[in-house]
Every structure is written in C-alpha cells, then in structure tokens.
Image 1 (cartoon, rainbow, N blue to C red):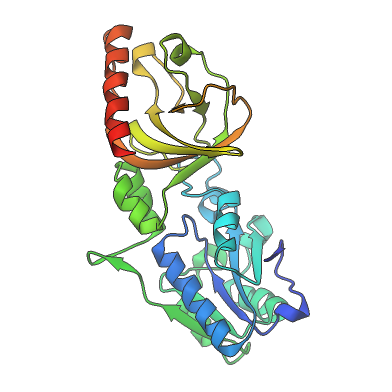
Image 2 (image 1 turned 180 degrees about the vertical axis):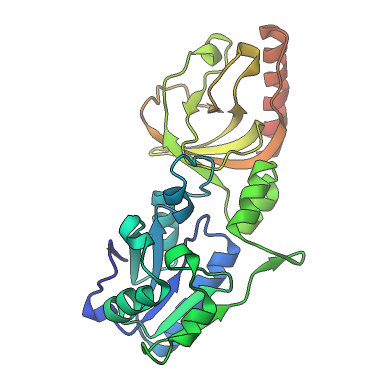
Length: 304
C-alpha cells in the first residue's frame, strides 16, 4: 500500500476507484463502502484506494476537542492496510484546505490530481467549505470532470444506521459487546504507559497508566480487556476514571495485566475492551477497594 500525503498520485494509480471519508472507527458501515469500491476495482482491473483526512475535521475546527476519536491516525492506517489497498491518500486538513469550495475540491483534487474513474462515498458524505458539498454536488459534476459517483447505501443494525456518531454514543454508555460487533473487532485504545502514583503496586495490583488523549471517553468503570505490545498479548482488567477513593482529578486508563510484572513505562501498548464489568465508585477505605478488585478480577477471568 502506497501512502500519499497529498492527492497527487503516480500515473499507475490514475483512472482508479477511490473511497472517500473520515473513516473514524472503520466500522461496518465504512467497511461496506470500502469493500464495494474494492469489488468495482477488481471487476474493472483498475487501481483501488482510499482518501481520508487528518486531523478529523471536527477536531480541526474545535481545537479543544479531546473526547472524540474512535481510532487514532496510526490505527486507521493499520486497519486500512488489511483491505489490501493499492494506495492511501491522507489529506492534511488545515486552514487552506478548509476554505476550498466543494466545486474546487472536485476540480483540483479529484479531477486534476487523482484523475479517478469511480468515486465511492456514503449517503451522508459532506465536503468543501462549510460542508456545502454533498452527494448531489458530486452527481452534478460527474460529466464535467469525468468520473462516476457511486453512493453506498447505509449499513443498518436493528433498523438503525450505523455511523461514527452512533458508535461514540455507545462507547460513552459502555455498550462494549455491541460496539465490538459493529467494528468487527475489539475497540482498542493505544498509547504510551505513563508514571502514576504507584498506589496499585502498593495494594498488590500494579497497573499500567495511560492518558486517553483524543479518544472518546468510555463509560467510567471497570472492564475486561486484552493488552498487547511487542512480545506479549495478555488478558487484564482495566479501570477508566478519576479514582474517587483517592480524590483523583485526572482521567486515566489504568490496566492490571495478568501474568506480567515487568516495567512498561514509556512502552506503547494497546488495550482492547472486551466487556463492561461495573461503574466506577468511591470506596470508604483501601480494604474495601482491595476486596472489590479481587471480586472484579474473578468476574473478568470468567469472561476472558
């Protein structure tokens, strides 16, 4: 998979099929768009690629937004690679790009740079200055700029359209089993292990602490998780929250990995959420907390 950091493609990738979208989460709805584009490319024996935007536009316009992403930029790349794309275009979403009108986006990016033959988008795709462009705009300019626009019908579950917004809502409410079905994989947070106050170690349950950074914040509480890094893939128990027993002020993801005792500070780990166990709560003392952690671990081990 060739990665382009702008839309100027090599000649060998001209006259191809391109699926366009933010693809935050790469859920089953996104996968439907990409797979349909891939089938078209295969049938016509032409190149196949994806165009996406970084940062996610809403995070460009609302700089203080943190609690938003379903997958990181790096995760998105890794997940897209599994579709065996010929190329991936990552458009830098900056001030200049944000002022491009819908027509200019089609003319300058789609027509002049990618020279694509088929354009796949979802029904709710919006683009251009102030999101003025939509599927009608794409249809309007098809003949002018020599491409064919194909709109993928939405992916539905229980008569509800599956979107990134829908998945964020379910993450915030702790519906992990449903989320994992809609992603077709376990939802995973990746990040660097940071130093904490070592309270977990003192009470016999050492944890790897991580900031959630720009990830959407899941329901506060305890989860069954799978933790992976270079050299290991282990089950564990994680808590998302503020540690009210200790009057904590900072939101953290704290993970106790089963069967690992080594120092993982500054290592990048992936914490995949498997099941919500219970909400976060404040305990009257350390003994009550320890007792509850033992109960939680027993429950997690039954599940994993």
